[in-house]
Image 1 (cartoon, chains in turn brown, orange):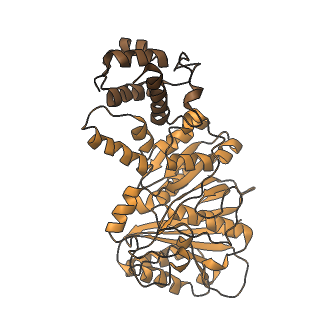
Image 2: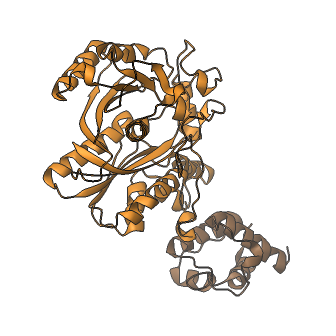
Length: 87
Length: 346
């Protein structure tokens, strides 16, 4: 799967997982911050995203510091998935 | 005893925002789902995590919380809370072999998530509690409010009752024989001679206090009992009437929770025999059977006292036409949890 396809898939999964009502994949920019002023996610969502990575890509993030680097935006998540996915 | 000032009800009938109870909306596959209402007033970030029960409660409470910004407490009765989300969470345990689980479904599915969410949204730091005593969950919430008002006569509380249909509770109740095996229309709920009822859901919210001024009605008495003994139910009802200081002929209407299950009809008939001069009306064909259906009954009685009109489809026995001032609600959940409430016009 190419990077663009993976980004599209990830956006769809984020919308589904977090039940982002009225948000479409095209509404999420690749470099838009996921938390705070960007997509407006919060700390509970960060746990949901970690579970999403585990269930869909076999990635286990156990170190919170690592999580902060990964869960920045779509670009950082996709880069990490490409390097560490086990499924 | 307390006064009811404002109410909101979301039910399978047309009850919010406008009320039209004359046109009976029908059940589908023995289920009466609450009508969807607009969630426009709920912030999207909060709405996306809400299950059906929480969403219903927040939508119903919205107008009340806007109007009453200084409520002294939020007291909710719900037997199951957000059961659908609870089952989603439990299914994850199986699906992901007790691995990493997501918190949202769990957080939103506990019964006390409803009162907590209302407190959170309205920034209300007052008394906040949830009663979960199956078919008497709402009545216990109501008794709690009574006791709170005895201790704090100047306080005002938000009182509510709600439950939702979930696949889980529908299937369990079906297998236990509490849902009819045959598919019926809710307008025929009382005509068959079979066991079981139809499933329902809804929410009713009330703003209550000790202040008569501006009140619609007054809840004068409430009594609950756990028993399957018909004579005991009858004796408790007579005692309830005596304690209410009303003669039998002063009861204008009896609103019974008859639910179409032939096993429990005798209870209602015994109660009806004590107040032969009263109009007898039924309500479970309007919203189905669930543990906190009595909250809807209280909302309905309050509305009838205000409107002085009883929809034809509700009437089981008509008597001479007279002003409606005193309504007794009798509810019966699965033949062992009974409650009586006396509501009077102010």
